[in-house]
Image (cartoon, rainbow, N blue to C red):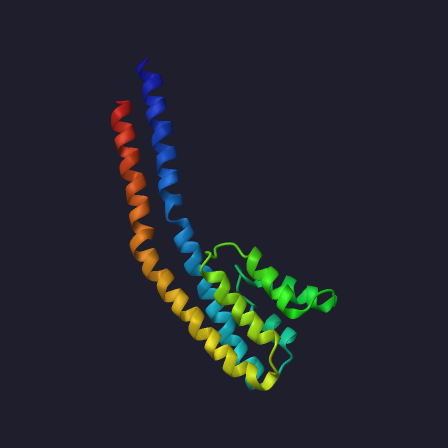
Length: 169
């Protein structure tokens, strides 16, 4: 009987530790995705403004080394190469399928795509700077939320788990 109780406590404790670790994951993932967006947009500015690359080529180069958003951007560029969709549709589809973004992030990023897809290359540098400022603002909000809520949630889940273990004793 004692062995069964100890086994139950160990299994329950392991499950609680796993759930506690995962409680802060959405906050950390959002910060990482927005950091990569900020890097990608910062890389696009010189590629479009100084090197005058076409948007598709600039997008390919901007996301190199960005593992969370890179594959989605490359898939978007590939759909543009097939000429099946326009830039705005492909960009919005990419933003909709990106993991880690929250509901308030998507409209800001879709606005960046709308501005990029509907403007001449001369104006894209200024529009990218504005989009970069918006993404930087979102990133700062996400970092603050991760600092507060991202730490509170695992602590809260851990406390509930500890209470459950005490009740099982």
